[in-house]
Length: 326
Image (cartoon, rainbow, N blue to C red; front, top):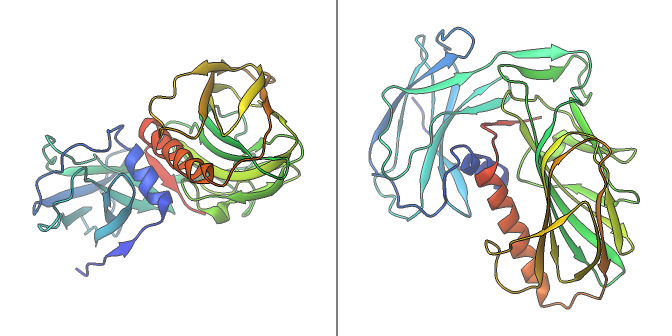
């Protein structure tokens, strides 16, 4: 069976880290061990032959595929963790790909015995005529920073709930499975690594559209944009369990629907503040007005660090166990 080793973008790193709700930085697992596993259909536990399986090696800042295999007629596969791996805080997880969606098995790290067999459950994909716009938002994170040109720079990470036991896609290719409205006056919108593949996201008439399969445990949207002026209002169309805003390099002048929160788990310095809201219903008002001042060049690094910290924090806490590709 041919093995291959390839680098992964941030998208795979973040989603891989979130899979077990683990804490990055735990001691590394015992190396040199083999993983004997099986891929099963979630509906009836039947074996899934000829499925591609990838072993992901994940750290706090990087990720890569270090081994791969294809299941045999009984759905079984074998993978190996490299004996030379000695970096701290390493975790591993194997994922089986079914119709463009990666389904992860248990995450392996210090103190966890490798299951025997290592089971991965996959779902058949169903086609639906209409989008599932009624699906709730589990977590929505926004990092906001004023620029020297009177604009607000915003980076968002949105975790969308799936439909338990079902992987869904649109009947018509290219039609969105889920969408959301962005603040008024969005400029220079761009998809980011850290969730759906960038080509699976688009901005249409002020709405972000996800044109991909929605896995049963949900999906993640990551993107950035600019808005003009010091005030920003976030439309809330979906039930939202938690909304978090991090303001970098500025002071708030007025809050709408947000409460100040702790900032202890973000990088020090950079004048970063956190605001939160929970259990939001559609048409809730969420926003803030910034005392906008030109952002010095120095804190630009802080903006990058806070954005990275937000993505990692979201990845660790989010309740999503699979990743969808376009």
